[in-house]
Image (cartoon, rainbow, N blue to C red; front, side, top):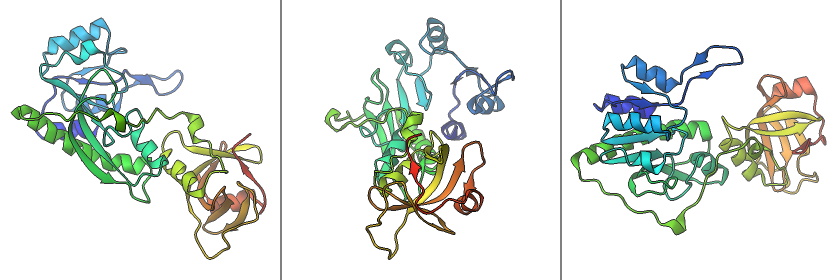
Length: 304
């Protein structure tokens, strides 16, 4: 929504805002609109909510608007070649990575999971191939040590909105040309599935912490304890003067301290600081220790 509000604030008024159809909040309840719909109506903008953006009805409606540009941000549907050909000038997309790195649905998540220390945003001319068009504008950003997918997404949304305004202004002046992407450098960031958040304690503490950070929000990370699902919400690397080689297999609880649960990994140790037992609220490690009385030597496992 940041891109929409800042574009309008910069003096660009969309002919129409296209967003996803209304969805029910829960079984049996009334339909609820997206936050994009709500904000657009509040600003007096026309809203279009097709089930299929590529249908004949959708294409006819969009053609009738005679748009100069399509500006696409996290829409959630692929646009067909016919629909991409509708705007007079071009369709552009704001993507949260430095393309051609991390093309796909979950770029900032995978950048964190893979341990990257930098990323960015790109504005590209859209083609039928996902995120493969010429890059019109890009800007780098650091991935901070304390970042997770939620905090990084918040920061990139502001950076991306500013970049999008720059790009649209240059397009308006008629002096913006794109740089083709190098296909040999392309990497991919597919949509995350629930199973992607399963912790493998044989991995290093560093890679597990990156997984926790990268899966924040969705899908979240999880393990099992005493046969029940346990979501891991916050963790950090355990670094102190203790011996490096702990005589414990991966997933074992080594120690319980006020700051958290110290867990042995394939390499190194992880300090679990916040977690959520199955069917319970999120809690601090100290609350978990007081309530569940875990024992040193008990095991977290990635398998039920």
